[in-house]
Image (cartoon, rainbow, N blue to C red):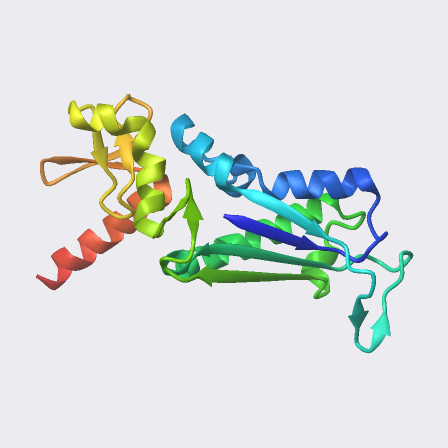
Amino acid sequence: MFIELFVPRGSLDPERLRRLAACLGNVTELTEGERIQPGWEQVLGSLMQVVVHQPEVWVVDQRVLDAVAAPRYVVRFHVPGPWRKAMSDALVSYATRVVADVEADAERPYREPVVQVQVVGVTEGSMGVYGRTVDSEGLVELMSEPYRKDFDEGRAVRDPLCGVIVPLDGTAVTLEWEGTLYGFCCSACREEFLRRQRKETASA
């Protein structure tokens, strides 16, 4: 995930700006402390890059903001296109919370429209790592790589929703449904799976 942070030049001291950028790229912050597999954290962490832009000129309501004005923020997330809609609510909430943590007035981002979050979907086939293009399924495979041997040897399963490999190591989020053990990347995926299964059962 490529993350861009825009703040007017001079509106934040360097330490607060560094802390804000570091938190925006922190997998633990993104998942709100929910435990994720160490292998995924390593892969996700290596893909989450934050770039800070400090424009010389920033205009709001036809007024140029100066260094003494209360800061404004734009946070732009670039995510695989197929994930954009599903991730948007969580990313807007996450970015606003992270900004609020560095604000002198933590309620300001919820009271005034000072944090604008944009979630941009990257078209399939237009993202690349390792010198080759990678689509959303390819990113899932990158996240699964640390557990591929476990999967091949029956010690891991695929999350039925997102497709990542989940090790059955006793700490994974699991669910037994109609005699089958499923593993999930997080509790949100398990809840969505349960919702779909119950809906399917009710309509049968």
